[in-house]
Length: 415
Ligand SMILES: Cc1ncc(COP(=O)(O)O)c(C=O)c1O
Image (tube, rainbow, N blue to C red; front, side, top):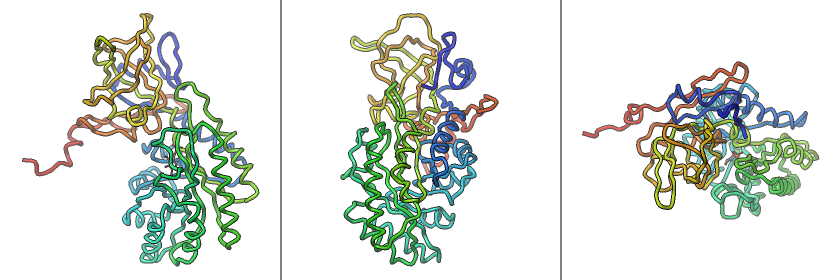
């Protein structure tokens, strides 16, 4: 866990969370540059001198300051929209180190990506391949592509975050792979550069990754026998983190197992980690607005809700909740809920805490899929984001809290 108590006060990356909460409007996200950097370098160093590129998955946390930090560390990027590509470019990221995934890239997005000279498109269907080819020919450029395979691997994670199983919408079935690569090799607007897969997220067992890499290896051999050569193998993201003291896989062990399998092929290895770089690097700080007891339950109602952190209602995800000031009063069983008019608006159920009105809580491990899944539901203002500098430990605001004017600005002709 990324927080510790010191004299009953919660600290995150050396910062006294109580002091910071007392002078800033809650709820807010607070990130640690140090944790992000350490996680990135952990991957980077694990590769040693094996040719590789880490393409950080922008969807996990797309704040420009986070992207800029990673770009400066040498990261590439995995994007799934034109908007994410704009962020990468604005943050100083290199489009030539950027791969474009996703099943529904629009023509406009494909044109933008081609004009930006991205590294490659991870193609998810035959239709998409033909569209990219047609646009590339029109624009008189060659589009580099890799085909995303669906390795049909059962992973032990929430069904909503599996992506490589038989019934998922992602990737191309193994039985169709040779046909689509053969087709791609004949298209004048296409250059085949790699193969890609991504089997899901929050995977804490290394076996499914090894299984999918083994399947990729057999496909590469099949392609070789048909005179189709690849420059890179992209094994996607998905490595899990510890949300509830469960054992999380070690990044260097993960990478060394992948290298062992892929070394004989002597190609560049790409990975697309998101959660395992930024997940532990963020907390969400919130204030208790009210407490409430019913005959069967005690509720702690805080000023953050599902509009700020959707993971608990969306995936029934567990996030540790800590009192920012650890008082010595007796603890009780409670549900920590938000102010939103949905029964699903909870942050944690059946937690043992001691909290009363005006106290602060910190919700842990929210650096990934926290702010990026936030919304303005109930016309709530998205929270501010702050980051702790890794050298000076000073904190800077990296996204202002929304204002009501910003939210209403796009609505027109209403009177
Ligand atoms: C194609 C692709 N790559 C990478 C990722 C990042 O996954 P994670 O954050 O689990 O590492 C995702 C997330 O689902 C994804 O869809």
